[in-house]
Image (cartoon, rainbow, N blue to C red):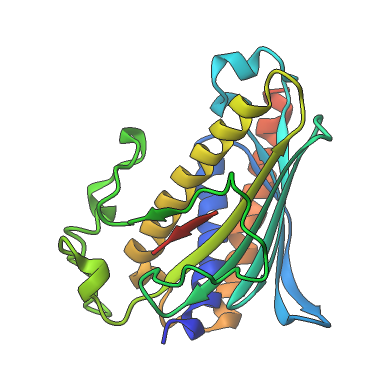
Length: 251
């Protein structure tokens, strides 16, 4: 039952996140955000962003990257299937590839990416948006799903064990591949990136739930208009900031 809502939610989340990150001076430049047709997957949404990350890196990483450092992210959203790719502005041997599939269940499908042979190094991780610990700097009481309830849908107040009792429920399955083929740093960097991605997924899916009253019921045309407005603001703001500063699953 959630599939029809995914497009509106995704478009709104892209726009609002870009706006918020720009207001904090973190630097997100939206290069593209537009409808896209693919001969295999059909109609979808193509989004391309530049994410300036220097101020988010640990000290050991900042010591070896340029002052202006960004990741280019391209995402093709063909609900209920999406592809996301990230490459680094100065490290051609670094890449992130994420495939996403959505199903109306609680994460019980262990073989959703069955066509892909599972490597021995593949780790399966369940992300609980209500009860997994979130970094303190990102915690907001209004986004704590143990206490939040939507005024429009009445969903929320997720209790312990909600994954087994909540109905309806949807799981976002993600197959995350990180590559950093640099001797001496590969393991450390790849583990760090996987942790960051997990934290981002946890926060993003919490917010998608907690912001439901902001995006539910809005038509695609209105959503697209709002998205263009927010993205234009973010694009202008982050250009200035840039010049100034020089397998996972989630339910």
